[in-house]
Length: 426
Image 1 (cartoon, rainbow, N blue to C red):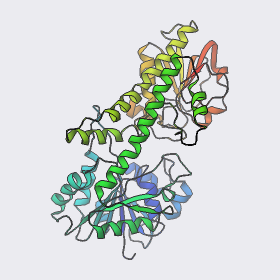
Image 2: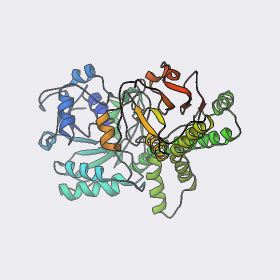
Image 3: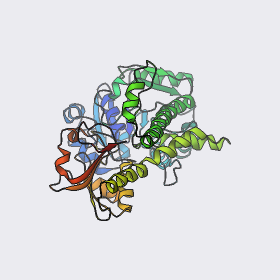
Image 4: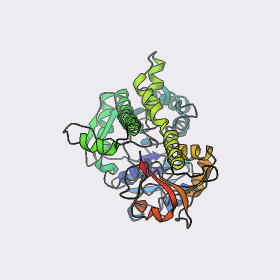
């Protein structure tokens, strides 16, 4: 594959690992509108911790004019001579859980300003079927003045990044690919296949690839919702949910899901994209939305269970002191996007409690900006009426948490990972 120059648009949890990987074989311009992010990456540091500093530094180049490597920039001029544009911006939902395509529109406008004949624009963002060709391509056409599938082409290869996972890195995860024509599909597939060790799967159309991505996480969401509902039922029966799951898991085809808070940029968001599209076609998706409702209710449920435990231990609720362990959306990862730990915290505060949030992985300024919550990164030296483990960071597993509790204090384990001293768990 000759004369390829790639621009990766958006250098977050998805874009940076991909840009780094492409840079091992191609000249790559990593583009992001956040100047602070660009400055950080140019210095050889990744605050998301997805790419280790030495690996990042091994591909960094000081100039956009290189034969191979990665140059990071905020300047659109630096991506003018690229011929592949890979868009990896987030696709969140708004406060009403409706898909927010604003980042996709803005990034498409940016690429449209530099788009040339023969270029291929590949989207990696999770979307509902039809977004690439019906929402993004018209923006590219309008801004560039070029005609789709004549002057320029599109592709889709949904991201499968698992933040914080150092085992399943981007090159080790099989990639689904698609193109706006059969020929372009082969080109897109060949591009990814040249760097993805796990291989690729070429889908017949972009819509098929979009649909495949959105159901991956919807399936997980529904399965977790089922287990969360089981946890609620078994708690009423005074049955250990984790013991039940362990016993059931001895059957060869039992799916190993555990109860918990469901947040993040994928599982807690993607089902809404599929539901929105289904409703546009006149179908109301009952199972998908029921799973979302149940999973979104778990923060309130956990908080209520903690308060019940405290009452049962004769702890005065108003102005009681509670330590919450973890505010990121998952363990051993600094990502706080769409974390549902904030639901637990919010409901605990509604009862008049004083909540301290300890998370050594989360950036306090980011948490304050996103959720207006104060966090600490060092273990506090005081006693608490209750401790709630919401995220299973490795740092928590060896702590003597009971030494932080008052004599009649309670320890609630949302994740079911603590081995001793637990009063109750989800």
